[in-house]
Length: 177
Image 1 (cartoon, one colour):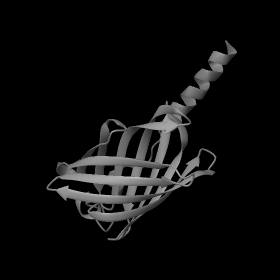
Image 2: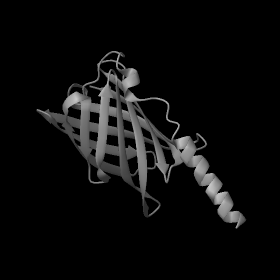
Image 3: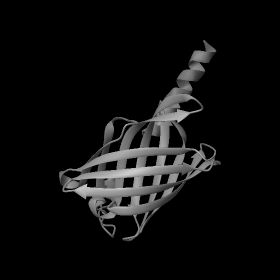
Image 4: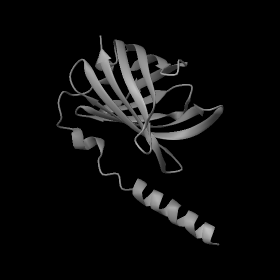
């Protein structure tokens, strides 16, 4: 009985804290330069990233080489990841620009697709990723924020959660060649 009460209290606290999101993409509507994914993610980009666990400890570093192209409102982001432990991964995003700064995205390891909204210099993506960890695959929810700094640099910070419980963050710096 005590165990159920403790679990209920922890789950309730996690849901309450998860519902306290304080910023929305519209908060960045007046920020410059304006982000247009079709312009920024076009050509070759390099990215440098880290994954930090819930304590803030860096548990993995990685680089990404991206080849990006658009035909009208349809884009392809071909990402080649190299991790600090020597492993490699490839993800191909297929994006669609929609009216009012909205975007949709699909990739083989994204469950049900990604929904994005841009305003000003920011973009917020939300999606569920099938994340392989130590021989198992976990469905993890991403709340992914991108901030265009200038025509060559963008910063990206994504929180990861499972069942509403915070797992860690991915931080990336993109540079356009």
